[in-house]
Length: 57
Image (cartoon, rainbow, N blue to C red):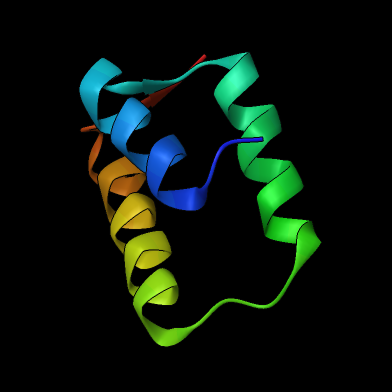
């Protein structure tokens, strides 16, 4: 299982969320609560998606 940082780094590298990365992200989002730094990372991902920097396949 990938860590949140692993998933975010791969999304950043690819510039998109593949179905596989989306599944890993989904598992991580429902598996446990997040600390403040992880929440910040998730907010950054949301901004990337909203601005079009990251596409969703």
